[in-house]
Length: 92
Image: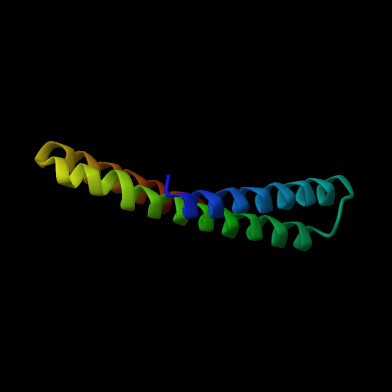
């Protein structure tokens, strides 16, 4: 991994960890449903930010290398990206 992206991704996971603990506590305390949903949506947004960092790293490292390797690797890289795109559009 690119060191800067790795550092930012790990930071994001720490934030997510805290958000999840907060969500768990809200559910245990039977907080107001809309507050729990708001927290859950914030977590989803944080996961999106983490995924963006991971895709950025993948594009800058693995995909670049795969494109340089030629046709078969290039096709594999495109296939990976299409699968991720489909997964991201099918959630919810």
